[in-house]
Image 1 (tube, rainbow, N blue to C red):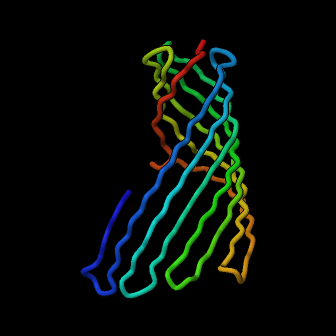
Image 2 (cartoon, rainbow, N blue to C red; image 1 turned 90 degrees about the vertical axis):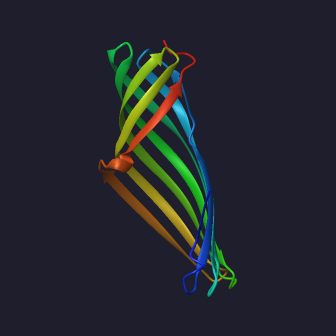
Length: 181
């Protein structure tokens, strides 16, 4: 949750933003090196821009995703292993924008993406790992349906392929295991 203001500036404004996200995954060890599972993503946000000399704008965003993953560990020692992971995700999102001049727009998005990631897992105990991962490779197909008020709509399909590695590609996480062999 954040708040900011520019009230001292001509045509000043204030902004309030709240967001929440969670991405749990559940997997089952098929062997001591292979995990098969499912991942769920949820994200919600709302931002209010209150502009003193003009229309105020509210942005709302809700997203949900679901998909299977497979992870293969390549042990170096008992307490550390490299891994590769592949996942396919289906996602659905709704983006809504409205302002106090009674105009609004809505975008509904459906997407399918494939993500390949590489990582390093540290196992401080048999039932837990601390992971550092990078997602350098992904492909997606996205369908956007845009509606402006009650008057017009359009549909756009997009495909994309990403192969990059930058500071936004790295993730730190922890996993807890119930059936690690």
